Length: 253
Length: 307
Image (cartoon, rainbow over all chains, first blue to last red; front, side, top):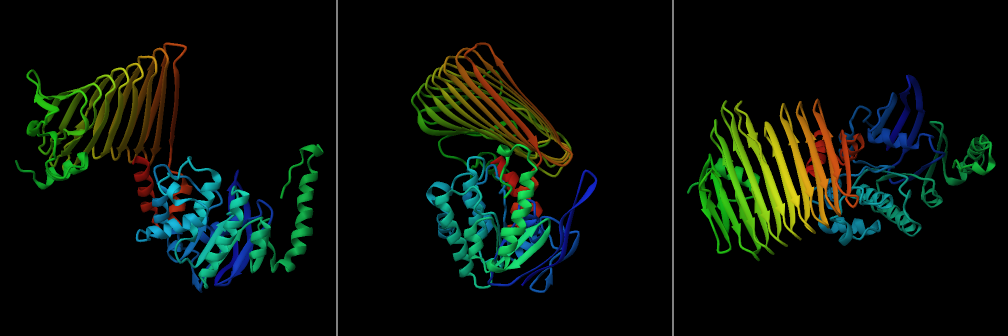
């Protein structure tokens, strides 16, 4: 069980404190698949980064199977089996895909495991194993590689931050399938996918809707449908109406 | 001839050699020739007028290599050496140089290697030079290499100039004259740490129609070290040149990057880019989510970057 108790995250911008997460309480059960969704800037990525230890919490506790991990750093949490695939994966000059995957999976990982994982996310191992993880890879290729690195190894908690972003339509179905399959292969794993995609949302055992740094609603798709379709829809529409010229309206979803 | 453990370690670091190599080689230790060997097509002879050797590669020699490492294990040595390379037309060879200094005492050890290459028509060379210093004494380890290349028509040279670590001060000077349809690719890798200083001055003259030159420099400055990088591309006629200097700055280090382009013809196409920055926090965080410690993450990033 992964538990977030009264988690708040504050940052200081232009000397003003800004609350990104406000008193978030969440429970993630082993073996369950979760989707976190909601408008941009609602705090989804901050929840993920707080669990991985990348962003410090200003208040509250994080517990993994009863152990308080709030004060542990990124490395220590990774070694407890928490894995986080970034929304915007960084690039690395001079590091090959094979090296990158070995860093993720451990030195003793068999070559065939690396090859299989690459193939699963739609990257041909022949073509990609010796490519550099640098600007030579497109955004979509980086996301696929990021998902591959997150799925390697027997992790207890796997968090994928918008895995579908930048991945082409053809690759997307396959990606959903691979993530679900990896989840099923590890019966005690907690999988958390941050996504706006209906395909991921309908896969989830439980859906968490976040907005304005708080959990707005939580439950099965049917339970949160009202929040998703009406309340949040309204909030988005208000943002749209601020624009004077109707032709210039962007979709805020 | 005997190599001790220190010699062997230096040779392994700078020239990837395990013991005495096969083929043509010249090993210089503490200012004296330790071993030398020529082959049918590659001759190595000492200069008569000054310290150093003449290396002559017969036209058409392909798939061969020459190793000419220098090691210094005594303190207080100031070794200046002039090496001249004649690379015959149509040949294709690998030349591995480099200098390793083991200085255990208080006196300075210095090696200034002046290398001049005449790469004849259509010849290709890959030249690898690694510099490395070690030893627990307070004595400084100084390396001031000068590399001059003349690329004749259609010649190709790939340079890999690397300072691994442990060199207190270096002033590196590289001058290349690129002839018609000749091509230069220069890769420089530099690491400085503690109170070290490094200055690299590069002049590439693109002298003929169709000549091309690319300079790619990557460096890391740690501690209180200081680096200055000046690279000048000078274009005459229809030529193409690019210079890129990319540095990672850490701790209290200081770096100057000064790429310069000089076009003497409207047909010269010259470009440059330069970047100095810290390691990105996201890169370190990413590797830490794989279970690496912060230090391991930094070491992994730097090793990849300087590879």
